[in-house]
Length: 244
Ligand SMILES: C[S@@+](CC[C@H](N)C(=O)[O-])C[C@H]1O[C@@H](n2cnc3c(N)ncnc32)[C@H](O)[C@@H]1O
Image (tube, rainbow, N blue to C red; front, side, top):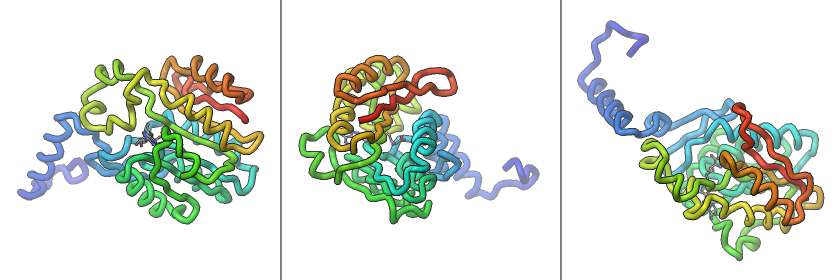
């Protein structure tokens, strides 16, 4: 509309623009209206079955790429892949790596597989529908891995009620909220890292603001070494990294 400011809209253009404006005014995120968003300078298709990739998560991917870039044909496990943004951008930036990407939601798996194929890494990212909290998860995955990455649901039930309408009414609750105190996934991720990584293998987990201290402690208690928190651009510890 701005590029052709003097051109009157046709009836159908006007009605589709009105429809989009109405949906946006009701709080539907712009990324769902457009059907895509950018992450790590790549375009990912998004829909209400997947979390909209957040810029904070790029910190996890950037650190993993920097750490693993000279490591050769590494095998990576991504837990809670959603749109596939972490899995596909790692595969794009680590040309010898292969990634197993897990999600419990079939619609997320479909979206992530579509994104990996569009980005030309479909042959190096394998998608698994599985519940990572399930005791039988070990059998669904194919350890050992050199790295485990995850941006798990870490919003507590209390926080969920206070989130803006854009998120609470439109993004998938299961992607954001763990149904409890926000810490449900971290002991499980630490246990999976201890069990599924090669010795010296690395785990990266995104954490919510204020969660890093407790997560560092949990990871240390599980026998993981050199646990450290990486800050986001606002100086908030955002990603916990540790070594088996
Ligand atoms: C915070 S989102 C992260 C999505 C994507 N990796 C990203 O960074 O944008 C968490 C994802 O975990 C998935 N998830 C939730 N519970 C799960 C479980 N028990 N097992 C596997 N995946 C789960 C959700 O469906 C969601 O896609």
